[in-house]
Image 1 (cartoon, helix red, strand yellow):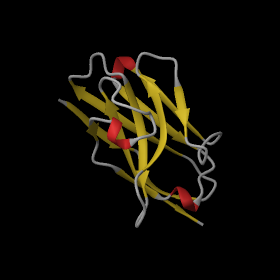
Image 2 (cartoon, rainbow, N blue to C red):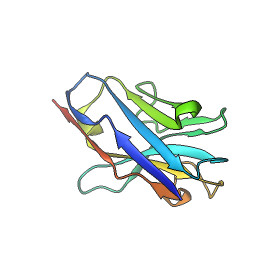
Image 3 (cartoon, rainbow, N blue to C red):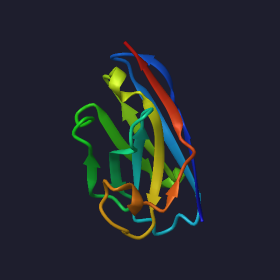
Length: 125
């Protein structure tokens, strides 16, 4: 089992920044990748960013490329999502997720085995 706890969400004005954190605990050794997804009211959950836990590959959704940065701190078992130049359309509940052993495409939520409880990000215009 893997437990994930997100933090760092909040209310920010358009153009502002937030940094989300996701602390992982439990059986996190040999985790394949971690990702961030988001879900806005009335919409499906969508991919935001993902990275290989061992390093190397990083992926972003086109809608956040150039504004968001995903990173990790292996010593702290934590993944971050730095969000800059936020827009009202970034408003959503943000979830981090773990894919233990390459279950499928990085952008597909069914590929991920464990999920956090989510943190709300609200961007006002």
